[in-house]
Image (cartoon, rainbow, N blue to C red):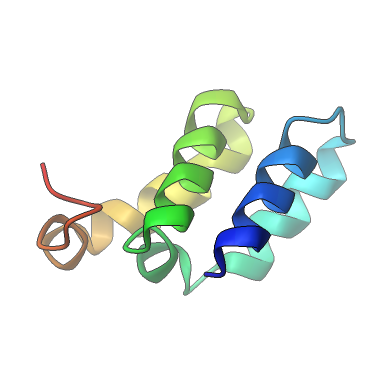
Length: 80
């Protein structure tokens, strides 16, 4: 993930958005969340998602990360 795009995504995600926005974003990222979280910028975005999104939408992201926990945890950004 590009450093500059990380700032844009964080700004976008801190704005009030309709539930359909979060649901669609969670769906679009499906299959990529564990890869996104391995990147420094991506891990910050996913942290924001998990802290601030409604559980219905964040559970999609959390489930995928947990299913790939071994791969995620072995990166510098995902180290437990």
